[in-house]
Length: 116
Length: 112
Image 1 (cartoon, one colour):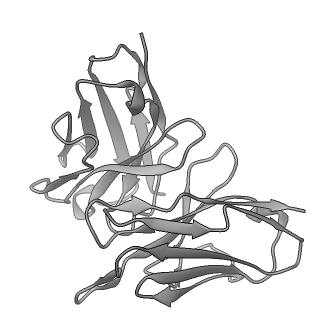
Image 2 (cartoon, helix red, strand yellow; image 1 turned 90 degrees about the vertical axis):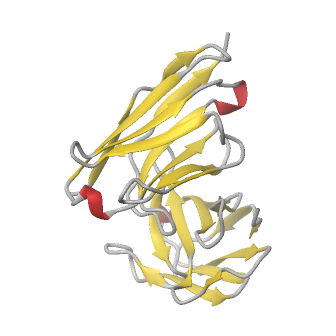
């Protein structure tokens, strides 16, 4: 069974940093691209970042470019999102998702709250 | 960025009746040599989104055949042939052709 499980969310002050992680299982991790998608409270979905299966190509939404960094470790089946210079508008549930152009499996999400 | 416009925003439906959701993109979603990356997701209350349809019309495994997707270019439709109680939730379309990837604003389906 395919599973993706996020961790690392929490409360952080504006300007602070947080690192999200995603552990994947149930499939061959290094054969699939991966994405992070977020959902602000009561709002719709926003694609944040993506990474190719090889890890050599990454993509970002303009809203996070230069502040967030996506990486993966194919030897550990993990996906990370390093978030720096956090702002109030980054407050959201962050989902780890398998795939890029046609993402299929979603995790349960981890809540990031940016507030003083 | 490609803007994805869904309508209606809210869709009250009667059990057993059909329902349709429209999704329009500001640019063609045809991706040369690979097809059209238009996907549909359902987010039930309190749950993560679940993909229903990928590349316009391909139903995911386990998705009931009352769900179907159609369309081309910039104009797409998700149709539920006979709505059941478990279909309640918010439906999102998403384009995977152009960077950055973008979602529609969502259509809330509820039972009358």
